[in-house]
Length: 247
Image (cartoon, rainbow, N blue to C red; front, top):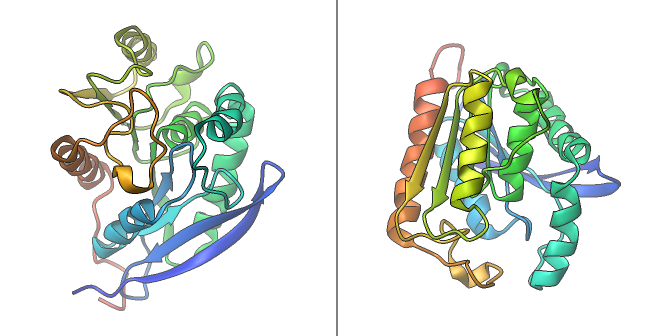
């Protein structure tokens, strides 16, 4: 079994001290890296497990923070934090770039091979990094079909995969269509997967999630979405052993 090393990383962003989770694969050489954005409530043990799973596969993985170390259990508190952030692309990019700087500074990271994935608010941040022209190898999002400022999607330098539940009241059919029209008009290599019967945040176990109407866990579709996310990374950011003296 691959040995994974993890540690907490603290760094400034958005006027807060962010508390991220870094997972490193076995070995000593540089590896492709994945920036992971959490949904609105913040970082949970479930998401730390996703970062660890990517490290098991050979990626350097940084789960970045969006709430200054807080995990919101009250839906209104979460919305009071997330909604103004989602309305401000500049702030989202600041948070994403600060985390990206941490990931690039990690000696195990190959700075030319980085992808960004995210869930909900974290997925919106990943998309904003793309719209800002950050040189990513892939962008993968779940429950985050957000639309950017006019014309900026043309700056996205990589393939984009987005997943959404068919019964998600937040990511409506109209919103999906606006999102895909934006990417299509910009000439982006995009894919959208709709998971039948799934609601918003369907990937996240209910045990530690904020539960509001329209939110619900769908284990079967969650497993499928994770496999689809891994397929995106395997296609656009394959793990290679070259240059890793510890392999």
